[in-house]
Image (cartoon, rainbow over all chains, first blue to last red):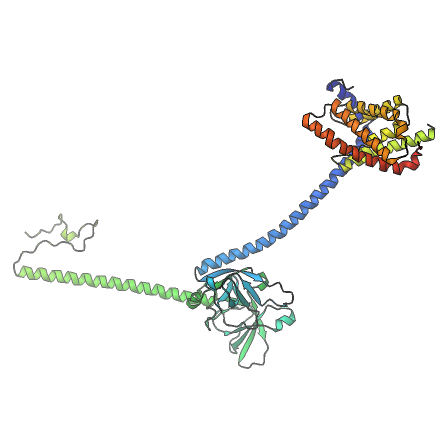
Length: 338
Length: 162
């Protein structure tokens, strides 16, 4: 059998496979299927695990990407006067409430104590300690945090404090706007911005929105509960405003209504100024032209009266590339004096 | 051999043959267990050398029919192993598991030697690698599996002492 050619051996093997060995072939096929199924299930499980991991990573990356994109947008709107920094959250489990964060930018980058810390959504806190390479910021949840605030329409002013009762009620990240005059009523949903008073925070940074009025013992002022625009646990990257930027303001970066009105007013005033300047320039040019004409006419008449030769006038106002005035054109109907 | 003993031997050999076509593909080891060799030795030692060779030839045909190419090499190898086992039955019947394991090892290696050389399955370094690395490993695994099988099936086999 060994000496037979392959063409002769194969029919014998095939016949055996189809007849006597068929049950054994079936057994072997079944065993191989079991084996493949087992191996495949491991591969499927591995694939599912890796896909799940990828999905989780993708979700985190998408969230971080969104935050970074917003931050880039904020950076381009601010244009100057800020230091970007990464926020490192404390992992201490004992902290019931996140009140501080560590930032990866320090005094060598221009960070100073009380520098405002902002995010694309709004205010985050301010620098408490600035080391050369890193700094620690207190968040708006910190008991020492307070900032002057105003409503979007600029009608109501007050001071923002962390809402301590929120910790007990489970809504830890809320703020109080205290000291709002009694005559001013803020409706729920009213946007609150920094007022720019006090010199720490520039005017127009978003703080949050009014939730409701809080009942207090104060008679002449009202206190409002404010929901912050920024969630501390989601902060990954922030911008620290420099002192010069705080002094010069942030303009309409956060798009507040009051800031809008303010900047619109400035734009209108600037536009009015430029129109006035242009009008004044035109008037001055016209006056100079009239005076020049009068002066030339007077000189010509004096010369004529004295019988002196008056050379043909040259156009002093002629500009290169522009044709001369009609009165001085050679083809003019008027005859020149000899 | 009595009819009862023959029936028991047939049952044990059938179990081993089934294991060869079920457990071996399931394990899919690189150095695989050859249950057919175990079945061949168990049957051949109870037969005359000529019948042992025929038994080996039959098992070799079954094994070769499922192999791609080289049909007949397995039959030749198993015939030689069956004949040798039947001829050395006095030695093989020694009630010593270690000795049985050793003969299983030798039988498997001899079979692989004939199968590879006659079937022209490999050449050069590959052949050497197969003969001196994978075949001994497979033979060792077969010997271990055979000893375990003999231990388990001993009550059924009623193995005679030497």
